[in-house]
Amino acid sequence: MAAHSESILTASEIPEIVNTVKELGLVHDDTSFRRVAVAHSVRGGDRLIEVWLYRTSTAQIEELIISMSTNTLVTRQLVDDQVPQYGFTEIAASVAAVKADPGVIAAVAKRGITDMSTLQVDAWPTGNMGLAHEEGRRVARCILFQRDVVSDNGYARPVDGLMVFVDLDKNEVYEIEDIGVWPIAEEKSNYDAAAVTPRTGLQTINITQPDGPSFTVTDGNHIRWQNWDVRALLDHTEGLVLQSLGWTDEQARRPIMRRASLAEMVVPYGETRESQAFKNALDVGEVGLGRCVNSLVLGCDCLGDITYLDGAWALEDGTPVHVDQAICIHEEDFGIAWKHTDAHNGHAAEVRRSRRLVISSIFTVGNYDYGIFWYLYLDGTIQMEIKLTGIVTTQSYQEGDDLTYSALVAPEVAAPIHQHLFCARFEMEVDGPNNTALRVDIEADPPGPSNPHNNAFRAVATTLETEQQATDRVDAAKSRSWRVINQNKLNRLGQPVGFKLIPADTSTLFPADASRIAGRSGFAKQNMWITPTNEAERFPAGNHVSQSRPEGQGLPTWTEANRSIVDTPLTVWHTFGLTHSARPEDYPVMPTEYARCTWIPFGFFDRNPALDLPPSSHCG
Ligand code: NI
Picture (spheres, rainbow, N blue to C red):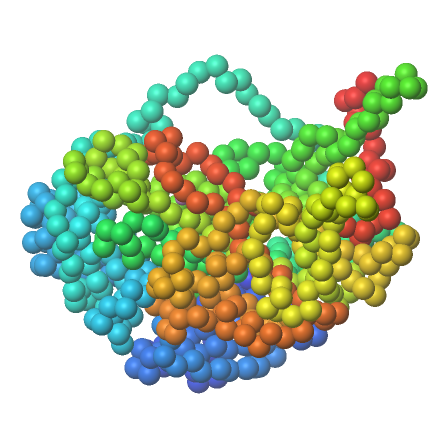
């Protein structure tokens, strides 16, 4: 029997899917699997799976939707002139090809490296820098590092100046660009426990939940916790996805979001050196976050009474990869939910503890590690937090080098300035399918007869009627926020029910509009986009972002239609993130930084929904 339509994909399902695709006659000798995931589409209770194929001889991508309930093809779309996401098998092969290439061997020998086993090869997505030799090719651009032993930190010793281009269809090095020789840094900058003597004085912290957790997980991935219920998925491309998020009160289950995910991200680098300027990774679409997921370890990654969900994804030949403990579900104490001390009645303060349900996964993309953390709170708050750690990308430094666009992090190592801009996609269904969005700015009134004390300021809500009107940036000077309301459902005060998006103080893309990266990742030029929900519009830089052909795909193109967004199913796309001008403290491994956005109920409830929390048993 096929699983529930929104169940997490399992490794045991993948052979069945691959078999169905083969039986449909869609797999040839040169066909590879590029994405196998639970389909975004929902049709009845059907278990729909999305499969992307790539055929080398035709250079065509095929986007399929397969029904596992009936083992039939639901839709099939052919895509020409675009480059599929690279596969992990071919990337591993390209690394071997680089190490064996005579041109590479000669180039690193010039830098004093003769033992090729000490070479670390990182295959990067090459992006689209307009290089003629990349036209008509699928390309990995490899950069190099040296480590004496495999346990060393490779990023501490970049072999700068060299870029090795691999034709992925042929698995051969076809171009080596050598812009100059830098000395290889001496410091190893290792960060493992063997290299750093652990400090003392930290006493044990244990989290104990003697009665067990307050959530349940049934039917594979259906999580229920207090009033909340949601399903968690691991998607090949987007990583951790929430599906069918709702709140049940005395009356009924109230939907809030149909699907919430990190739909794309971009990491533009500001350094002009050729060996760094191409680094413009779109780590969701180019790399596939889901297949970079970590297998989490109790007591290390997560503390407390944990329930894990396993994940699965497929290699290019359809072989399933099973990941134990890919998604972590647990509760965290979160300080005070609310409190008041009544100075007049002499009673003890009324105080209630807050806690949150945490649904999280961690992904390693080359040098960086990203956590996607979803938090649900007892007061109706929904938060998405990206945790950023790992190692900054490094370049060599020698005396006289320009440090305008980079900062020293070690004596011979610099880190280029860069951004991490995340585009979260929220498919809204606040108390029903049809929603409307508002932009709310706080404005101060000018002096005048209606402002006799010159103190007046007010919230000015503007109904956003079209996509282009909605496209906007965060404005801290106006305390700008956005609200998604359901005009058809009113609370007891007669206000439309809604949720408010509180953005962080977040910049947009810094590279100039004329840059290649701005052409590839237009979604990052604005913090807010709102579109009518369309299941074909899921990835804000396009479905196939590798080598970005053509530029301008996704949100910038879709919103040209300037569709109406009033009282209709809405998708909110919010770009937020951080800009890193690297510190010495970010090295050799970065203390975790946080980027987040928060939805809070705004008139969704009639009063504080956490009023009925019981006083803590530890209290008084
Ligand atoms: Ni960074």
